[in-house]
Amino acid sequence: MRRRPVLGGLAIGVILALALAAVVVSGGFGATASAYAATAGCGQAPALTSGTHSITSSGQNRSYILRVPSNYDSNHPYRLIFGFHWVGGTANDVDSGGTDGYNWSYYGLRRLADNAGNGTIFVAPQGIGNGWGNSNGQDVTFVDDMLRQLEAGLCVDPTQIFSSGFSYGGAMTYALACARPAVFRAVAVYSGANLSGCSGGTQPVAYIGLHGLRDGTLPIANGRALRDTFVRNNGCTPQNPPEPAQGSLTHIVTAYSGCRAGYPVVWAAFDGAGHDPGPRDGCTCDGWQTWTKDVVWSFFTQFSSPAPPSSTPPSSTPPGGSGQQIVGAQSGRCIDGTSLTNGTQTQLADCGAAAGQRWTYNSSRQLTGPGNKCLDASGQGTSNGTAVIVWDCTGGANQQWNVNANGTVTGVQSGLCLDANGAGTASGTKIIIWSCNGGANQQWTLRN
Image (tube, rainbow, N blue to C red; front, side):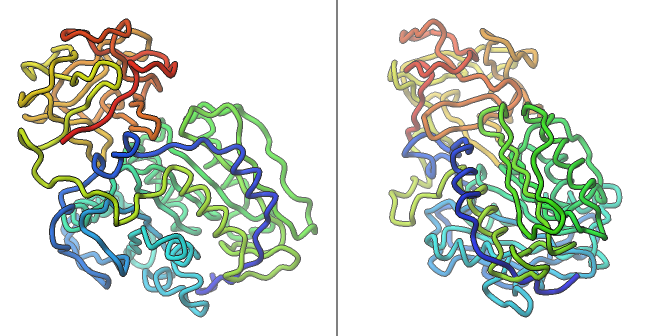
């Protein structure tokens, strides 16, 4: 594999088609998204800076390269993108961009992020033996350990964590989509295969796969198989998406239809370059001018653009303790876990200082209260009317929630909206999940 894959011009028609098919989803509640989605590093002096860092993981000394925006603001939660190297490659190859330099840093995404306002943190992990064998899940654990360090030391938006990788790095990105679906908002797999495993692999993750017809290293059938995992998981309508003809030296990008809201699947097939993340149309060459960087950047950023650093920062110590109140737009009352006893159904209550009204959104997409309690869809229910209760945090999909730009909160497992039962506004109105219908009783805002 070249250490610098070079690339070709942006296909405007492809981007327009992708944009039309995209479902725009954010990681927060309306204008307060950045205040809601924040890690321990927010509001604190940064504990990490750009450069190479070491960390102990699974008893081994591991390393990664970090790129923090030059205008870093500790009161602004940032998007975080991992870039995984190919077999024989290194973290430095991904970070530096190889012989193409800055233009191809992080598969071209870093330059686009800087052009868009410098709102992204980039991480290039180093694989053992320059690969991603993920023996006994050790590379997934390495990512877990990096995330803990990054979220403690920097202000990261936990709803805006992404992964990208080429070849073996694509395999590692696929493994993360399988094993950590509640952590990664979306992934981009360039010319990948199932080489690093797929522990779990049943939950939805927004997925884009890119693969060449002439790939003689990891034939395109491998990429199709990875893609189809998430066609199934994301509830998309199965199809055989069009691919360019051999010898056409072009590419075709297809956005699947029927996917669950917020979990699109996109397939980009190309003819020309072989095993390569940076193909260019009209030749068998590659380069940083490739269309792939623009397609992947558009795919990642559809899920929201982090608020600019000049936005109002969250309070580092909200009144009434840690966490924030979830306030009903219709009722003006707060979601309350009352006694925080397992099995207690949450309800509306007058907003006050009660601990049961304080919730924190974490990188696992859990809404947690004091005492390691989580908002939970009772009995792992996925049907209208399922009670939203308080329960010990287990990591189950029924305790994972997406917080969206339109003010709704949707269950990862069910796809249903957090709902004040019967459009009630009185104290004691029970909280349930229900099919999203645009009602004001399904709209929520945050308050410190």
